[in-house]
Image (cartoon, rainbow, N blue to C red; front, side, top):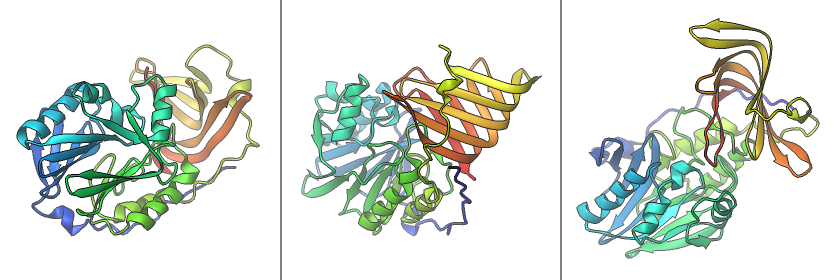
Length: 349
């Protein structure tokens, strides 16, 4: 069943707390930046992916690794050497590489890693390094005399993503459950679009009193980021199982199946007119239907301004339709890593 979503205007007001002189950029390396939120809390950012550093006295907790072994070590070194703090724990907030790429480095430094049980399960299934200590939907940790709460509130960007709440600072790390204000819909290849809004609503119910909200990507703000996320996904409903699967027309061993009424070449790129593209990886099929799709063969990348997107989960008995939406702005490409297909959307129509 096709779903249409018109993204309505959202009140755009940046949290005054986030516009003060407390937000100071610290250049740790060419690719790693720290943003000071309070005397105890910093955002670490690498390749537009955010994490959190909380330092209380001589103890520290880090949430999310940079998407790089080198930058993960640089972050650890900064906390230990510049802040003279012992890292008492490292929280992995989801299984994607922009949150746990550097976990091997963390372990080599003798730092204990923590993650929601489902994150550990997915990591094990995909042959990834597994965080050492698991926890249930909600756990409380201590950094010195202050507590930090890790909380799983439902499926969103991935099935396992959590938020992290520092009550003494009134700071919420929303991770990829929360989008930056006016940001793109994001990578939906592993997302539960029909559940995302309800998950964000539960985040608001629990932590709507936050003064500062840090999304997994992009600019931090206040609780308006949670409201924006709720509205962004609220009309995405469960896809109908009545739609035909791609399996009947996609039986090749190639990464992509391409069908178009006619092709043209422009600036070295292949233009597919009235086209269907089907891509697959180990766990899913992705189907795009559009009047025009641009294919960059060298990068195996597809770009489309508008069309219909269907995502199927592979099952033992065939395929199960998970997502069926109309989009505005799509990028599809595949990387040789456990995430596989990336389906990045600008907006849902």
